[in-house]
Image (cartoon, rainbow, N blue to C red; front, side, top):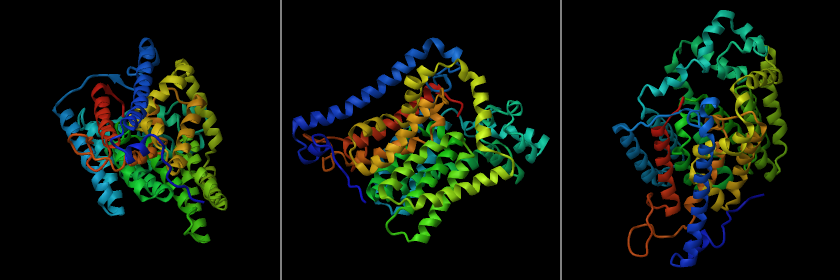
Length: 475
């Protein structure tokens, strides 16, 4: 069964067919302005309500992690200019390049933009994260002391777990073993750890675009690419292991979705399903919070009624689960130990109500940017919503679980691309409206795109630079 693009009557449809209709223009303007104001109001209220408690919560820049530290240098201006140039020309490149070249360009733009925003505060920021004592590579000396076998076998012992860096305590053993493995093959040090993180993490871009193409068509995937590459989430992405989790999830979803395609024979479906399952099995052993994003793949499988893919996915996942059990790690025991450490830490004094209702939604909204809010309000493409609904549901589940109180601008990076998929429909709003300057004409920052899309893309860039210039984040 196929979904077709649906448009919202009275907003983008009116703009496209009658650009000189004042009433239609007013409705289109309001449909954009209201979510922008709501986005700003949420961030402002979350910031204001946190003001008296920042020190106690150890969140100097609440609702996001970090400290307020204004930083304006020539590098800031240079990065802003580069970002705005990308916002101006990247949509055209993504529209005209061949599909594979477009994937490469979008991925490189994503990495370059993330590196550029990090470098605003100095090039040393690029590997600072992995050099931090709370990060995964910091556990390597402790593993060297006891050996890998003992490290894995005792990992679910809460008394042992408390000795490890904070981020190791909060995740399954898989991600720690990944960085230990890098060290064992001679790629030691924070520089190599950061490089490996980027090399794997950047694959999130093609993973999401391939999925979008399969479900919503190539046109929507091409329109999504610039928003995915230039999202404010880049501020927290480039050297964060959460981007690795996002990439693994993206390709687990992509393979599952590809397995449901009408042009696949039975053996291809089974092969893609098993491969997807292997990635799901790996993913849940990298982070406990990855499971909800499986709703994206499940939604597509259910809509296309390709239930035969599920057993193949299960087989692949169980192979990985069995491998971890064989070396001494049981996922549920690990989760239980992590919950104990979580409840004994700073989360115990951070109020659940504030973070569930205000703090977490505001921080995540900063990561996806105001363009995502406008897309949620205006885009009516059912194919994109099939993907985005799973992403939004995953965010809701994670928020209501109470297992994330702050830092979700980073922790929820695996969810962000699946909310941003809706921005792939923004460039279709008002299609046909002239975007050059002149009497009766409207102007767009990105030539060839309608104003609502081109100007929002530029706003995403400005927001990312503003965040880095005001907040000194740990990532």
